[in-house]
Length: 158
Figure 1 (cartoon, one colour):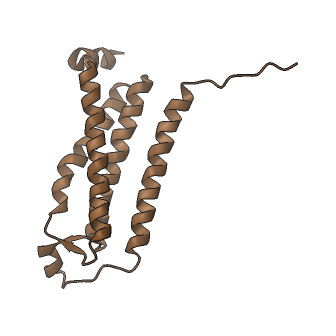
Figure 2 (spheres, rainbow, N blue to C red):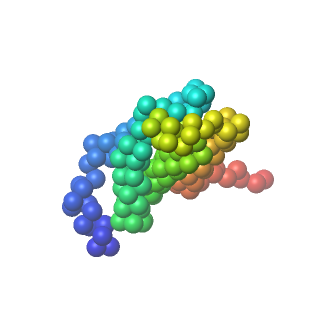
């Protein structure tokens, strides 16, 4: 595996690097839930915060996750981290686009240009479904890698 040796020499797999990536993923999760909380609490449908600035956080999560998934295909620990980064990044980007395009939470200037539309009635259902689906996918990905590394104890038959 030439890619693995290149990655190991470039990155060195130091524990601080791995911890930094997990912390970056955790920060992405925190921001994702923060945006969701803002969208749920904001009944007006507009905000002074330009949400597309958060793409600077979520796009690098996806790119780094895809990079580690490609370079470390055989490592289960790196696959777990790569999938967590990809899932958080993809859900973050999709949340930002959906909030804007469905007029759920729009930047104030854009909201004025669109004619001050009211948020749709189904917005609370969307937020519950989005967070539920995100947690389901993130949990399934984590379970896939933790359960595959362990074997269930087998009881002897008498």
